[in-house]
Image 1: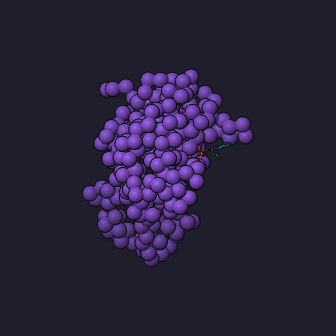
Image 2 (image 1 turned 90 degrees about the vertical axis):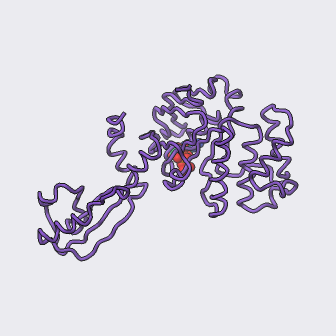
Image 3 (image 1 turned 135 degrees about the vertical axis):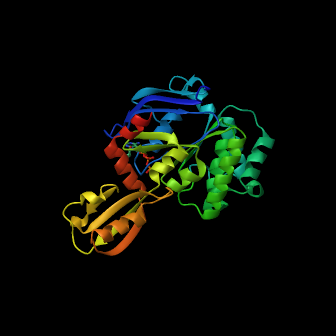
Length: 316
Ligand SMILES: Nc1ncnc2c1ncn2[C@@H]1O[C@H](COP(=O)(O)OP(=O)(O)OP(=O)(O)O)[C@@H](O)[C@H]1O
């Protein structure tokens, strides 16, 4: 196993306001992988990225980027990283090309026109290279942020919520670009609220909630865990307890016993629904309606938080 390109150890952050944004985060990122940090609003994703990029100081912990201590040598560490922030903070009066060149210069690298041209072409921005940023559409401005972040040829690219609020076309282009960058050997870390995005793009996924990294796993394994669905059976008559005969299904009573909820794995060969319905008929349990829903990210977090990551520890 090669050394990780990025290593986070025991990183916690308490802001001056008293908010505990991160608790003892440990994370290793492998060279060349696409890693998705999945979490709801306020989970601590931006704080973690900002600490790694030297923008925010951690309260405790260490960070190593490409073998270099990011807290004692922030500049050396930062040169290896490209950061695409959520919001546009760039000179609106500059041209696309000039802002990318300037960005590269900030990291102390000599000009490299052919590299900047290539980045602009990859991002379908080349035709707009002489345009002022203020003249571009919102989607084009997002692309400029990526071009800027890539201008100094970083080994690691952070994308903070890359597709929040962008249209389908730009989202697809971003995904394509991410895969292309990975082919060139760039390590990519993205934050997202969307399971679909993590599913589409990532090799590994980390779930963060309330400042704690709850689970880190290969995408396939995690998606299986996250790919749960619920079947709500509206009962004709409310039930007080679950009959023992229904013990083989993952069932619970909701809504004062008026709804029987069955949680099942949507990707499994057999969902268990037909046999459950047969069993209900056999037991003369009548129902009025059936409704299935995907468990939301929120439900998954609640499950994970409730479980405290124990199932993951057991598996490790
Ligand atoms: N500069 C700051 N000062 C004080 N509290 C902050 C600061 N930045 C973030 N926080 C708080 O820290 C917590 C984590 O915020 P953070 O922005 O890291 O979450 P996030 O997962 O990136 O959320 P989002 O998806 O909404 O961007 C939140 O409670 C937030 O209000």
